[in-house]
Image 1 (cartoon, rainbow, N blue to C red):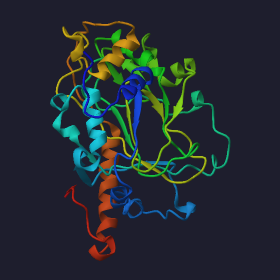
Image 2 (cartoon, helix red, strand yellow):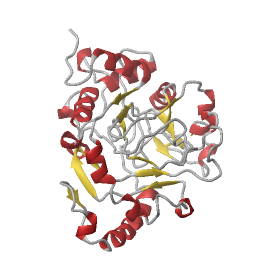
Image 3 (cartoon, rainbow, N blue to C red):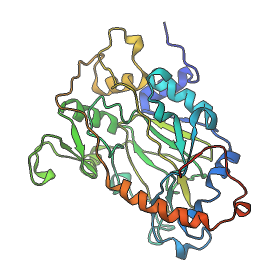
Length: 332
């Protein structure tokens, strides 16, 4: 008997199993988006109308506010529960989003030029720089992209490679010892090599992407939310239009690791089904051979510094100028 879902249609399910992603249109309102983004330029200390102040191509901002997904984007939350096998499997900490915007401003060099072939982009990776990766890792259960600015083709939308899910799944299945995220690469966690690239099983995303031919640029409108398989290879693209692109990329985690060896096949989540499909099997008794552990990525230290700088800029605004806050949790 087909499983009943709260939000996803049969077409959504088939598309996700074939392509590894779905798009939830109008998952949150333009009004709520405007509330969240109204201080973004003050926080950054740049003028959105003066490109001479745009000193960085891409900026990963820390978060100040958080709100439950269920209230901010209820349809996206329903779809996330459907993809992951139910709310009871999702870590409660993963039920909120924050204003940790990723702003792609582009550069003068790439403005109004022809786009690069996707294989030549320089940012191909799999999300999760804060833990040792296994095939069943619960720390990164979905790749989520809420869109806070309209994104046109060539406007800096995230470039994805659905073929990459199979490549990454097979690599992780072959490494139950886990692999370390080493920049735009993976290195077996038990490696004793001084240089990561000297390990015979070192994996370079930038090298392996050359094998792929299927790419999708994630364009969309304010309020859309893209939900992707956690092993989706993706890259920042060049913002040739130099229209500021604003998204977030909140992690979603599970209470327990993915399970690819369930007695009852109907209990597989859609993400688990897509992983098994990528591996070409119906069941896999996967067992890790080392202890799961977290990593403190360098970006955390950078964002802590950014947060202090943003606090000073925001403090310079009067409450009247800010027009009040919004109903969320603020970092003190």
